[in-house]
Amino acid sequence: MMQKIQGYALFGKQITYVIIANIITAILGIIQLPILTKALGSSQYGAWTIIITAVSLITPFASLGFSTSLIRFQAAEKDINKIREDFISACVLVTLTGVIFSLLLFLLSGFLATSILKDVALSSYLRIGSVLIVLSSIFPLLLAFFRRASKIGTFSLLSTGLNTLQVALIILFVSLGYGLKGVIEAAILSAATLDIIGLFIIFKEIGFRFPKFSNMKTYLKWGVPLTPTSGIQWIISASDRYIVNYYLGVSATGIYNAADTLGGYSSFATMPVGTALFPVISKTYDERKLDECRDYFKYSFKYLMMFSIPLTVGLSTLAKPLLRILTTPEFTFGTSVVALASLGGLLYCLYNLSMYVIYLVSKTKIQLQLLSLAAMLNITLNVILIPRMGILGAEVASVVAYTVLGVLGLIVSRRYFKFDLSLSVLAKSILSSGFMAMCMWLIKPQSIFMLFISIVVGIIAYFAFLILIGGFSKIELAFFMTFVKNNLKRSSSHSKN
Image (cartoon, rainbow, N blue to C red; front, side, top):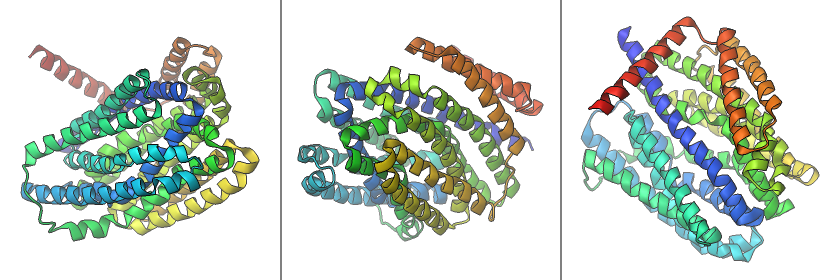
């Protein structure tokens, strides 16, 4: 029992690391948004959106599903020789495919700029941005190496370092007047730097030997079927940018992307939970510790919803002042998009957690089926709604797609592995979020300082009300207090040493 409690404590500590990293990343994203929108304007910001969206589409195909399969197959692996062989083999293959896809984008840049983006001037930016594909394909492998060993602290430092360096370089290059070209170069330089740092840390730990590719058939057999799912998921999450651009132009694309990105922060807690969850459930499931595995799912779902629900409500409540304060006046047209995007982010959390069950039982075809259905709905609704409703129609289509993914994903996954959904806690979280929204709405922030005050008041109101109505049990509160005290003591002792 004590070992199990220690396991939960370690799991909580790992999630805390990623939450801190994600908070920093979110702050950096909020800093970056006004810099880009004000320095580039809606037109060039829209062009940046199109380039990054293209990279996000191609990268999963270049990655060959290795970032997920490494975690799945190496979570319980102890043999350093096998770990080194599989990791280096995967790196070499992903680098080769990344280079091929980068060259394809480089060679097709003129055609894509003319026929799809309808602006031949964007071809030069696409050529520069093509380098991001190979760099962005390698980085998830580095993060997967640390995730599979539950080295979440290193994982968090690398992911935070990438975002920090990118924002710093963007600020520098934009201030020097390099414009969109400087923004792309900042992304390339930061990605290359963190790839080198990550590889240095890994090779220092496991050494380097030329790979034999001995186990790659197994990895490819498991991982490659995930590749089309990444592409289909891109259709749901990002293809609407291209459809908005086709019907409404690049400025509308920039406005839509800013609002959708802001609303997407409602799924903020998904990555911290998933980052720590997948390695530990893979290990406990393979060791047939099913009750322990169910507990990890139960608490992950409970706390994921406990954070995601207030984020959804809070972003919807503060959508207009957030856009007005963080961007230029033309971007406030996307206020309603923020509210809908935050709801989509909440539904995405349900889907994401459900897919970990699908991965455990090796039923990845189900993910492909769900994504295909959602993608077809999304494309159809985008074509129908965007000409009639503008950018709001694009977000309505996204919410419908995420509803299909979230609800059906949860239903289907429970056929294979059931865990407690803590429905009473979800109801209390919704009620507490309503109280929080009322408190924030009464403040009516008109400046960055008042916006900050509104957020702080909302957080305090939410958790105070949630504790008051019994959202946390006494055992959970005692565990949290002990967990915080122990970590504060460790921090204090380390600082003294």
